[in-house]
Structure formats: structure tokens, C-alpha cells
Image (cartoon, rainbow, N blue to C red; front, side, top):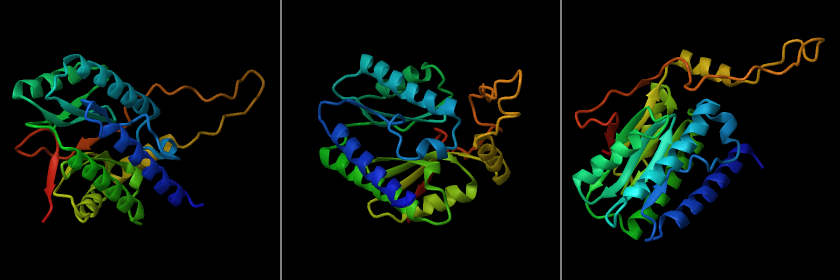
Length: 255
């Protein structure tokens, strides 16, 4: 079985798990699933290992804190990528919307929050099942593309709006946006992507390559690689410019 086929199967299984967990009317909050890593995803992730661990912790701790303030009109999804948090879903009031963001900003290691929560009734069962289906189609379409790396993007869908998170070049981001916009059922694409140059991307990838031990088990040496203390991939990455609506996200409507 090829790696691409394995990844498609992993995505299908992950989507099914999210559907089962997310469609229950008794669940007021959904975390983004940073801990649910597919086959081969960790090794090919552009985040540092520290950022991946932090993202898992952010989602779990953020979820616990939102539950402390949750009410019957709050349905919040928390997705963290490279310590940037995307909030999607709905709340009953503008005050709740602001309160959720403030709570998440105080979670350890969070460096920015993109608040896409809406004020109004929660999504219906049909909306959520349709969103899960759309996310699966977008991920499969990205995987089928030959000119981009699908694992560069995390896909979240809320009522037909597709949110794309990741670390990518502008060419990759524009190409992924075009692919997502071409998927049936997608009404809008919102990019929450950190843009890097081709050279920056090459540097990140070279840092993630296993380094051969210097001298092996020579006398007086352990042969062990030094532990990394980096917590954010270097060099610093430039986000897409904000739109007038704010939030650090760039919207790409479907034409």
C-alpha cells in the first residue's frame, strides 16, 4: 500500500471519529484534534516538535477552561496550530464571544487568537455532518494535488466556510485556496496561514532532518544529539495581511 493511500485511509478514519464525537447534541465544545495525528503526520509536520506538543496542550487546557464558563448557548471549537488558536462555532451573546477569547488568550503558550465565533443559534446536526463531509473532501483534494504538500494545512469547516491553518509559502497557500474553493459545498475559504519564503521553508525542513551523530560512540562521547530548545520554528513567519474584519484571517469567497 502506498503512503498516499495510507494517508487517505487515515484521513477517512479521523473524519469518522470527529463525526461521532462532534455530532452529539450533549457536547458543547470540540477541540481541534491536534493529538489525533495520522500516519506519518508527525514526521512531515512543519511545526517543531515542541509546537506540536504545545498545540495538544493548548487545545486540552483551552477546552477545560471553556467548559468552566460554558452555557446552553455555547458551542465552541478550539483548533491550535503552531500556538495560534482558531475559535469557531457559536455563542449566545457578544459578551460570551469576547469572554471565550479572553479565556483562551490566558492559556499557556498561546501567541495569538483568531476569533471566528458567531453570535446566534448553534449549527444543526445536518450542518455539522455536512461540514465534516466537506472537510474530508477538501483534505482528499489537497492530497490528490501533485504540486503542494497536503500535510502543510489543517482544515476546519464551519457551516460551509473552510478555514485553512498551516505553515506554507504564498504559492502553496494560493494553490490550496483554489483547490478548496473548487470543492462542492464550500461557500468561503478563510486562510489562517503563516507565510514563509521558499528559502525559509527549506531552512525549516533542513532543521527537521535527523542529524548524524558526530563521532558516534567515540571515547569520552555519548553520540547523542543535543536536545532542542527551540519552541517556535525559525525564522519568524509572516502571517497573511489582515482584512478590515480583523482577526488575522484572510477571506477568499467562492466565485
